[in-house]
Length: 169
Length: 169
DNA sequence: GACAAAAAGTTAGATATCGAATGTTTCGAT
DNA sequence: ATCGAAACATTCGATATCTAACTTTTTGTC
Image (cartoon, rainbow over all chains, first blue to last red; front, side, top):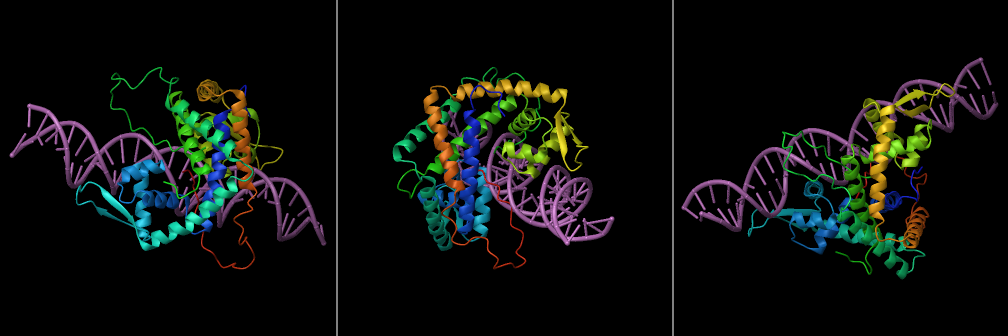
């Protein structure tokens, strides 16, 4: 399956992340939640009253996506949104009692999952692993490769809407 | 952001995979494709005339998802599907000339991306990295943790449709 | 040989995500 | 003081994915 000299790093990374993430989601579903619900609860808990921009950034999703989850979770009674009287542009998000309770339940499931995930992997190997992950992120964010043309001023035609790239493979 | 003793492995893995995958998709889009198109072309190339079940497994997606992509790519003239005369259940997938051409273009982009991704990472570190990835996969696939109750015979009520869990975080 | 079970794909409906456009509210420059 | 720019959030439309149900074709059992 590879016209590459070496097994491609990115593919291996993506496939592993996919199976691990799916397993994690399954564990959370069994505990009565979902992965998006868990990360949302986690972000709200860790910075209560933060605005949605910050929450989304913490989770690693876009604001529009967070809005979607907050709508659902608010409808489920897990959290509330109210406008900040200090700055009426921002919506302050806070957990309800039900939200707090679900957080505790899912936290237990998440801890158990993490424990299982680390089986047989001593801390030093995991530390080295995390360093490589950081290096990969850095290599990708310093894009010294794909800039044959960067978004210049030429070509300002009424360009049609760029389709959303929803990436998961 | 973490009520965990140590930084959770899975979260770090998922976030890294996400940014790397998004960057990869962006590179492929710039080259005139997308990530799903690339992996589909790659799988078809690597085992021409394979059936769709095998292709999907190679890519790591479900058959239904592959059907979706094949429909689009067939409409774009990148590939053809014909029923196997030996076994009329299977659809044999083959690339058209346009499909072959796009494959070559995207292959170049993918190689460039992989090169950039490896910057500063010697082979021995990447080998260790791959071993940890494999261990994580194994830890998750040997689920000795979440089986308080396994899908038993009790509770065979007309259970409502289980919603699709589309996981990406 | 008939017919149920299995195998391969497609279709249907749902969730998660994204980018762009839009709506509100605040800020800043003159 | 006004008015355009920026910040925050939501809405809109699209892509990618999943599970379950369905259709068609083959296989296996009696």
